[in-house]
Length: 499
Image (cartoon, rainbow, N blue to C red):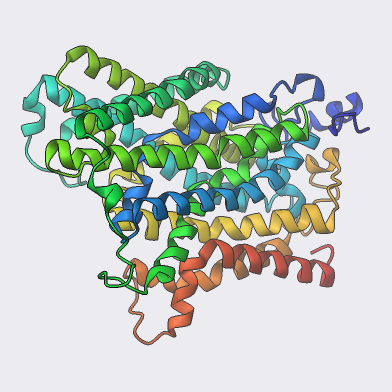
């Protein structure tokens, strides 16, 4: 029965029943109310820890490179995170109420077997992010080692896979550290997160102070006009750039907006997860992206060139102690973000495929291997490709998944789930052989309009013969996909309640 905090207690007989199911393992089991220890500050710290990272620091660079001035870029980032906070909080509700992780929550709308589809799609995106963060951590090690041993930087150019041997060695070293933490288990990330949040915020503020002191202000980027202003090169084109950019900013955390039940299942109350996330996410993203803009602006005065990568800025410091401390801080910060944001979810998602065979450790190892295969150094090589190909492309898939889940939980089921049935292929979520074809159809309908624009963006097809309106839908991929899937699911579920 519900408790005073709005949590649903799991009866002992239900726990005993689901423990024998082939859809059950300890990692996917509902967390009882007695073991939910996360308060408001825990969720705020989680988001501060995950948001204060190098990709956030560099996020505004693509927007400024596209023509925005500094405040337009920071405001776009803030608005994008304010928007994604809404599905984040909505999806978190079921995790807090029932103690269930994302893959189990998906079973209600997609079916006990059909949940494999959103779980795998979400997991593959996490694998890409895992690779990107691992590459960033490896690059931090490589660039700072190159200060002490310049010889490794003089190695011949990139190999067949677009990365030099020393860079790949540093990448694999950092990858190995990630795998070690995964092997130690989920509990090992708590210490990292507690250390990381103040560490990287402090590092960012120190860089901000250094930039102010040495540049006599924050430099030309903060005084640079928008390229979209009257008389500027892109006058009148602001909205055409803004909405695709906003979609990319929503896409930045669209992954976590789905699998947030993996964390909210540990919340003490709904208020804790709602307020904690609202305090931790949008403001941290805006603040840390501003630090990136301001410090980068100052580098133009100090070094005569614009340096967006904070690792490159830190390598200009010649004091060995500063370099070592900076390397350790960046590696711990990147490691903590990577494990929390990009391993917890796919490890659970891969476990959904075969709960009795795939544990958290095995799922984490699968994540790591796919992360290597995706060659993440190519994903981040081009700033425009980073937003308009990577971030927008996967938001075209994740938006529809979110639309289906929210439509099912809030409109169809009125926030009421049968926990025991979520772990039974013959329960109320079995649909057609475990698959909800209504949910699959709604997902496809939400993703399909963005496909032509995506294929043109990656140059797989020529878009000359296609309507401009159809191609433009890709720039609004998350919004289009979410809205269409939401509406389509409700219509189809009314027509075919059990399909």
